[in-house]
Image (cartoon, rainbow, N blue to C red; front, side, top):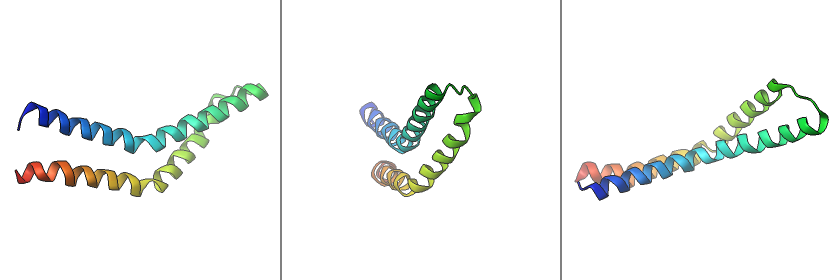
Length: 87
């Protein structure tokens, strides 16, 4: 196995990790922005106000995107790891 193949496999797996984490990160970004905007508009400066909505949003999006994440992980395994094991 050459260096180029190793770098390609690592690149593909890093990109897969980014794609699997993207729905959760986007959810926390949107929820944090909306709650921050509401806090700025209403002058409520409670630090714990964002915690529960973010947790609930992350859990909901995680459960909804679990199939998507599993398909990415299986595609990576079937297209990169198994051919390397088989030679």
